Length: 296
Image (tube, rainbow, N blue to C red):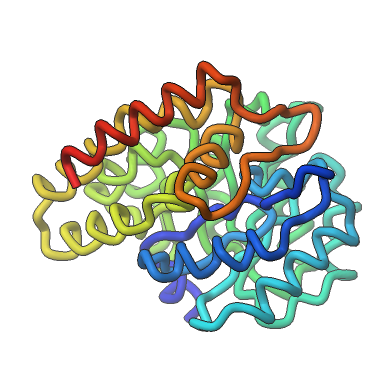
C-alpha cells in the first residue's frame, strides 16, 4: 500500500538557486544526499517550501525529473500540484509525467476562499480524475481558509484520497479527524513543533520544513515514538524550539535556506518577492545553531 511508504518523515524540499536566479542542480544534489543520509523517509517535491509559486512549469518538470534520476536510495516521492483553479490543477496532473511518483500533495484553494462545500467539490473533482492518490494539505495561515475536520472526514471516504497534511495548529481539529477517520486514512503533521503531539494521538508522521537540515532529529523522534518513549521524543523535539520560529520570521523558506547555507548544503538565494535572510536574521540563526550544539 502507498500509505505504508509515507509513514515517518517527509522532507518538504527547498529549491536551491544560484545568484542569477537559476536552479542550482548541484545544490539540489547535495540536499537530496544530505537529507537521505540523515534519515528522511520520503521526499516532498514542489511544496510551498520549494517556492513552487515562482517556478515555471518547465522548471517544475526539470526538478521532478532531477529528483527521480538522482534518487539513489529509491525513497518515495510526493509531488505538489495545487492551487485555486480546479480545472487547471487537473490539467497539470494529467500533463505531468508522474512515473516514480507515489502521491500528489494538493494544497487547499487559496485567495478565493471557497466554502466548505466548494473545498469538498474541488478535491473530489481532482481525486476523481487523478491517476495518483491525493494527500490533502490544510494550511490556513497561507490559504486564508480552514479545511474543517468535517470536510476532511467527508473527503477521507474517497478511494483516491490517502490522508491530510494538517497544518492548522488546531489539536482539537486533529483529534476529531483521528476519532472518526477510516483506519487507513493518514493524519500527517504539517507543523514541525506539533510532530510529537500529533504522533501521540495517531498521526503517522510529519511533512517537515526543518527536516531539510535536521532530519536526524525527526528520525530519532520517530524511533522514540515507535518505542512508546514520548518523553525522549519530546526531548528531541525541544531541541528545535529556538530555531523553528526563525524559519518563518521573514517567510518560509528564507530561514531554512539560511540554515542550509550555514551547513554548506546550498546557498541562501530565494526568488522575488522573497529576499534572502537579513543580516539580523542570519545572526539569530547562527546563535540558535550554536545553542543547539549544546544538546547534540
